[in-house]
Image 1 (cartoon, one colour):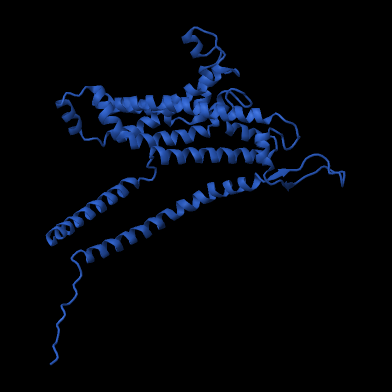
Image 2 (image 1 turned 90 degrees about the vertical axis):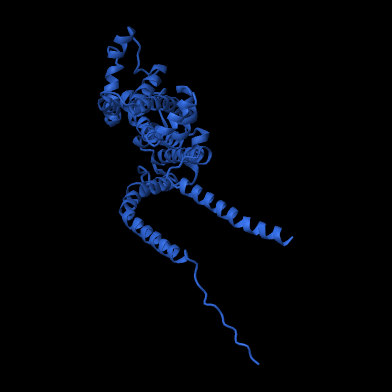
Length: 356
């Protein structure tokens, strides 16, 4: 006698339809985001991507100079030189004239770039955080103070350079206030500090503005609870403020570091070209190109590009700079996955215990 077996219809989980709808919505939003970003990405490729590729290509070539021995005419055009422009950077040989002496100048430009970046960004970070703490307070005239703090950042860099050039002139305001006759704009250590002071004055408000945005996300209840527990103002700053604004502050410092590493207009406008104490890698590459040595100039620019890329990588990997803002969702997703796994493991452990 055959026995008929009735099979219950397979029902989908209650959340399956919602998940499919959510995934479809996410896919649609992703496509819309790419459509909206496409014009901007195209402009970036044209304005930034193509020049970078052209610079990379130019770094493998050299401009012919002198007299062609075969024709007796002035040589022209370019020739492929491979990695000669890059090896010449570290050997110190001028690929055009064949003379040596460029290595010391390159090392000087590299050290100037690094030292200006470290000193300026450190000072900008300290002043920027102080500005943010001031702007976050509620007091009469706060709007005027905020506007005044942000004015230096709004001024174009070349205008700031010319303004500070007048201030640091031999007969300028700086010497009058100090009662000295320091040659700030001469090729000496004072020119280094003049550039650092001008850069800190201009860009410290940038770090202050981003830090202020981070401060405004901290709930007031956290500080109230800390006061109830007897925490001092310094303890609140160290234990609450700094940890909670750290992600924003790291990104701000990253942006300023990358911007300072490629500094050109401020020292060039204030001190001028060819000054040993403030010659940065950007100025060095510009002067090489201005002298018609496009291949070596492109090689110096590529070295600077790699240097900046390395610093950005270290910021993201070591300091955890969340540049694109996706670390929080990933952490939340990972945490939710761990919770789900733990929740699912409890019944299984209970069942195993019951079987024993």
